[in-house]
Length: 301
Image 1 (cartoon, rainbow, N blue to C red):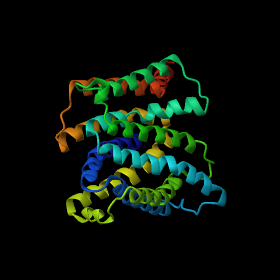
Image 2: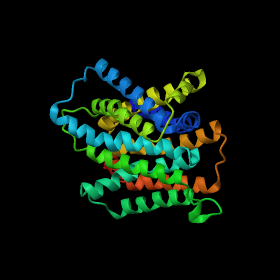
Image 3: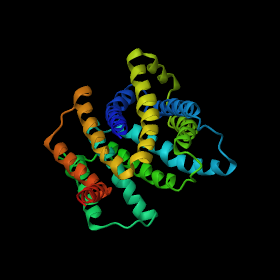
Image 4: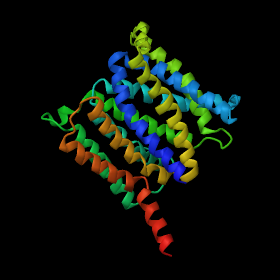
């Protein structure tokens, strides 16, 4: 089991650093254009890994519609919102807002899958969203200090949470790692179309051929996105979603550290308090605390 935990730790480290990587990339290339190429590269990498693992197959006719539906939220809208939002907010703010993904996913499950929510989980939701509110309201402007970038990143979190609910309804014979690869490849073409709709200059992508920007691009696409998502899906299958969700706290922590170290951003007291609230919110809201308490009681018995 320690191998899975070690892999989860590495994935959270990569996901945390990926926030800083994306911030660097969107400053060099049009965000939507960049994400089209980044997601395409990640998708190809996922499909190659699936082929090596022996789980690659072509989608059936009935599965194309499902992929298009989920991909619209999980790939096109999610990546477009995040990339564009990062242009208008700080890496620290984005890190904390992205930390809401587990809570939003559970909330979507309550709304669309009619899952029951107890007082402990409701407390988690309130604490988590309070943490983000505190973070985004930091500044002299109060409500006016919430940037459009904060709102776009939050929308990216919402559509991703909804897509996870859709993925949970997939048939068991369609491996989620495989559908991830297909959605990334085909979704990247739609993201590219969006970039052209908004007037992005394709020649900007030449920036990724610079060894520094190119290295950051490959880390983000292949390591953080392709390898990271596949490993996390494996972890959920091995140790369950509740225990895997505990590790997402490290994602937020590493993202904040990366923003301070690589981007030179200042971590304020409000950010620290917001992080603590989100951390507690994730533990309560995702059911991770309930899981730990039940496991502890089981050991005592």
